[in-house]
Amino acid sequence: MERSAMETEALKTILGFKQKKSVINLFERVIQLGWIRKNEKTGYYIIKSFDKLRIENLWESRVSTLITLSDLNHLNAHIGASLYTYLHKIFWHKVRREKSMRIKGSIFHFLSLTFNYLNEPAPIATTGVESLYNISKSKASRLKLAASKLKLIEVKKNYIKQDYSEAEIKIMIKYDLIPTYVSKYNDSFFLQSIDLITPKISLYKRCSLGT
Image 1 (cartoon, one colour):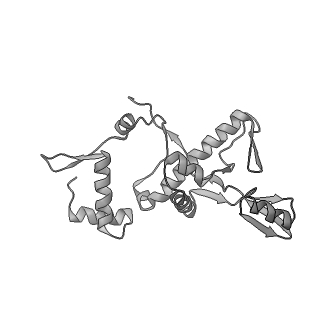
Image 2 (image 1 turned 60 degrees about the vertical axis):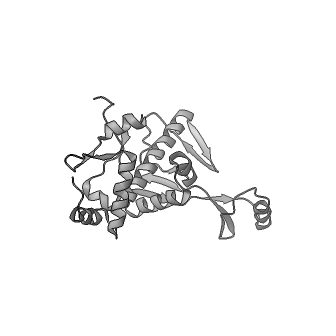
Image 3 (image 1 turned 60 degrees about the horizontal axis):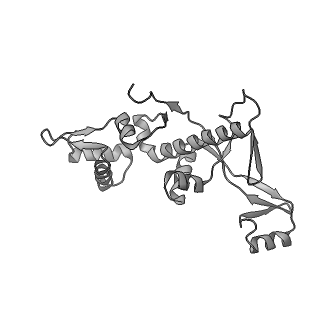
């Protein structure tokens, strides 16, 4: 695929960019990553296969999500949905192993061997996404918001009632005993905990390497 002004303009439209410079920067970035290379004789660019990238980067996991050509206009939303859906799966696998888990005042149970966790919410913190995928917390939040707006994941705020007086709450906040995210409703205090995520997309498993 030889890069031209016409093709750059087409990619700009498909990917939803406002400027052609964004497409050019992205193109140069994937060249730097080695995902595509230019055949100097023909002037065409060759896209490296996904399985070859997996081998070169030691990507052992075969879990994947389905993205079609029409989804390229909302790439951040699909990336966000993929990250949070995968972490949702990891969380419930841990709960199944431990039988139950307590996360910041909320308890999650794996009720039985036939328990279907796919439609059950999981607490997934942006700090966890930040550390696991080496991206900033703000970017993790933007990806989550983009996925939520496109209804690829469902995000529910999680508030835990606190059985303390207002004076006790203020003292606890002062001495960093609890986070500052405390809300008052009907004379009761609620601590904002980790958002609960329920995926609306499916995970798939690609063929093993070499097949």
